[in-house]
Length: 98
Image (tube, rainbow, N blue to C red; front, side):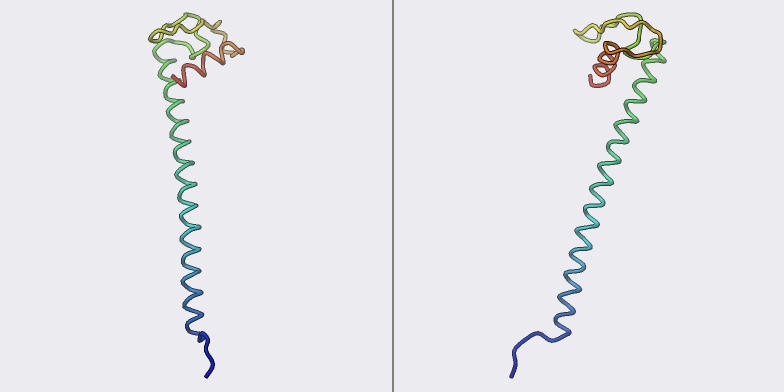
């Protein structure tokens, strides 16, 4: 009598392995989609913050010609021309991050 696996046993094992691999791949796709949604949500929040600042102060953050104090930090005034030079970009990054 020979010892070994029957075709039915082998096919069941292959089906189980296929289901496990499919589950892992689907899980990776779900994780990637959640990361993308989180980044989109962060960007939407930044856009909303910039629009709110412009509505309140009448200038874009970082390019605002009037120096503003936020807590204990005073942001250098921009020139209000709508173009961001390096200093104004630093102001904008600071305002977005804090």
